[in-house]
Image (cartoon, rainbow, N blue to C red; front, side, top):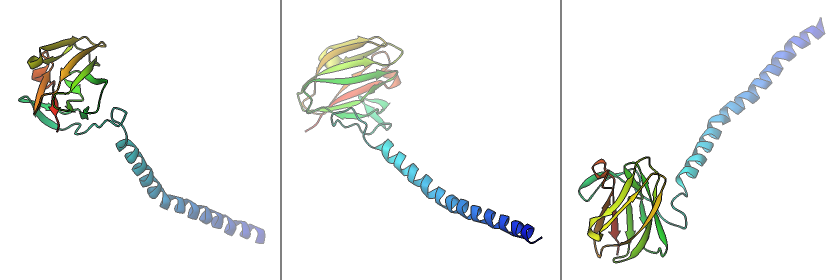
Length: 170
């Protein structure tokens, strides 16, 4: 009968030992989960942009451009650019919404319509009115203003907030 007793007392001790290791793991689990969450958050916030050190900022904030309320889908500093500058046209917004450049700087905008509707990039002050069909691309040459900002719009969706700006930076 003694061996049976030994078995009875031994099994609860093994269960207790297993429970302690599981408890230690459970105590560490929130710390591990928090560490994983922080690492993923840091990875999601870092990097991005348009490549080559370009900066995109203020995405998702409300702004007013040319008297039209819109949501900003980024600002890009192109003052050091010598090639083409890409603007993506989505349904009812430009990305980036604001381009910053040197006063009088000339750039070629590469327009890519990523939306489902036709869009335009229209700058009446420079006689620019380029229509781009869904999935298509086009190019226009623009000049930054000597000071302040110059508004560009999609003439089809301006009332929906599809506006942007060329902003002269000093």
